[in-house]
Image (cartoon, rainbow, N blue to C red; front, side):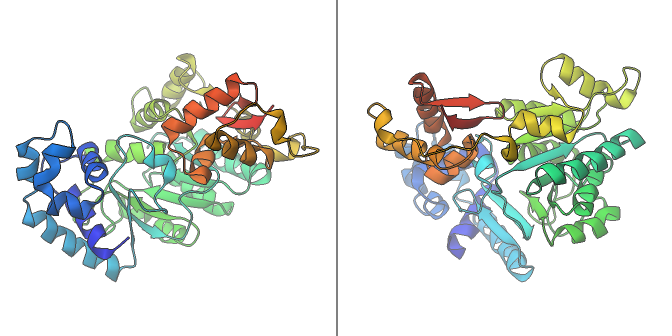
Length: 371
């Protein structure tokens, strides 16, 4: 991705009245962020619904000037600028309609790791919640050591999840509600720095952005969207972690919750998620791994690759999917999308057709395997 394209992508996020959905539609219609600005007069003819108001809004030199200043900052501080079309951009998040146009990442990990979870919960964590973070990740390390752990670097469960991940040598990413020119809360700076070695800090916000309340809600969609599963550890009847759980459900991602005693205020949200069938109940890492079908060691090994001749008239795309499934353990839909470069809406249709033909089956956790 060229420097100019990155600058113009940043500028698009700074144009008043152009949100992430419209910004993404504009980039898709025009082919690049540069063309959105430089060929803006053509937009109404290629993008249905675009009016002269959109064209006028893009005549915004101050947005470009602000983007140039931001780009200088990220270059100076060795921050990755990931536009939505970059290969390193979180592919799971890209499939969400409200994915940010630009992300800023400081760290050292693969944001498209094979297995990604987020652990969220109340800011007023009890000893029970803190122990869950430690025990869950300790046991998960034995069962599934290559998981990337995501949270929000906030007080309570978030920071304890990050610290437990560091303790048990997981990569861990903190998604921020502000720019990378600060750490909030400041008391978590030491942990944030430790996370840079095998994880990192991720945000959609430019520098000089204050951690306002609504930014945390916006941050939660990144936490949910970039993960295979959301795990709510402790939550009161209202809170940001419940928003993350709702977002995860809306993105068709798996959601889990640890139960608590019915009289415990900090478990009311988790218990309600379970009661409403918005989250599956788990009590251990083993429960989680089984439900996600991530326990590869217990899968029945395939004796031979499945013969293509057994399958009826497969299209080129179907054949590509079958070939992948014939040479591996069950594969998550997100990994199929990444490997085949087939858009998720198309992938869903293809998988449904293959399932109807009796060629593949779906397991819990959106994992697919050959019959």
